[in-house]
Image (cartoon, rainbow, N blue to C red; front, side, top):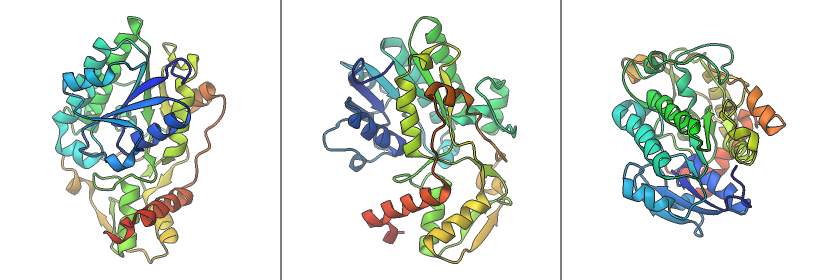
Length: 330
């Protein structure tokens, strides 16, 4: 269990990034003392409150990771390669960040650990809704990475290391996020929602892969972080067999519908450009539809998370861009 009373000092790896910085703020509001380890390759110092201790370092650096964990009572291990573009370009590094850092962390740190895996472990399945017990193999995951060792396989092997540690008595929880979106997320590395928002603000065409009828389940980062804290504080979430949890909105939205919402909220006429997925990511296939089975999440939280709709998400992103002046820096 991780609560401010039982586990007051926590480390967040990747805490200067999009999701990490929101989690840091929520932990501080809940009464935790927070330290962050981040190499700032995709995270930003300005995402963090001044009161937070930031250690600039790579999770693959054993000395940096062990030093950051010194004196901590718990760890939220969020560090990883961000976005399809980086994951596709740096396949081996994506794998190593997930697996090697987790192996090292679980090898020397005895406290409770929350690991951020990914819905990518479900591979290219287009099942109506995927539950945590969905059958997964190395081959099915590898197909997501274009039949190579990469991001998805790294997350799957991260989970394997976690469950091995659990079998030895270690407290580990594995989270499988589904398309977390919101303010501070950048489109630089292939995230579709901020990319669409900035293109619409610039009056540029929104580039859509294939026909745009593929769906995603977008969940606001505020709700995601609220769910993470709720799970971490619940002893039942750490019980083997219950400690792998999907976190995501179960209401799918097509990419074409997302484009329509962005255009409506930005107040601009839409210009769409359709590009084959294989031209952008050679050797890979896109997931047509993926929706989380949220029954375990709701059971552990004792409630259904309140996921804002896409219009609210886009409005929040626009407000954040305009407050920072980034809507004029396109």
